[in-house]
Length: 295
Image (tube, rainbow, N blue to C red; front, side, top):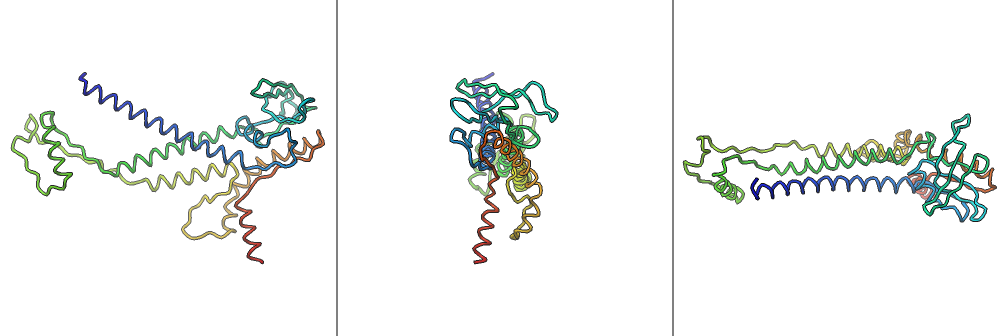
């Protein structure tokens, strides 16, 4: 293989690697966005100073469950947990081991700890968000490819002997030369003329973007975050928006009720007054606007 061809292959590999890296980077960006939304959706009140609300939400997002218990030295803690052993009649694990990244560990049971679940299904939220992030990254790549295809590249086929002549002819074409002259020997070796091909790729980036918006809204719906799943040119009134939020409210209830159940159990066991509710900035802003309008 010639040096020129080896260099060409190396460039192609580099270009492919860059494309793969960019798509992985895009995936990470979407996953980070979903993580930010998921861990900032709930507000905890009444937590002891030894319990970090952000750490609870990060653990629930990554690990589906956290363990609330009391340490004789540090006080009340809420840490990541490994669940196992026998199950009670409601399929709740009886053996719980809390742990921290600094090596701290504590074995607990049903009588001295409470499991906080991320949702009513007791499944990990992050696994589902990775699927959405992957699909969104793939859609972004498809949109980019389709937009680049609109540049309508021209492929000119000819023999190696014709390459210089073809390049000169294209330079005249690219320079808006009204007439391009060619000699009689401007032919392939077998007597056939050179060929010109264009991609003619259809423009579908707008449809892909619409699909991307719908997929993004689908992910927000799973997280229980208010969104407009149907795109309308006209301005939608609040009642129309609320009627479209059935799926949002159902998923929100699953996540919120799981936390509220845990709060009730913690309060009974440890004498605290902890509560948790979903932050809905969309509805809060609408309520404030209605109050100002009524005044």
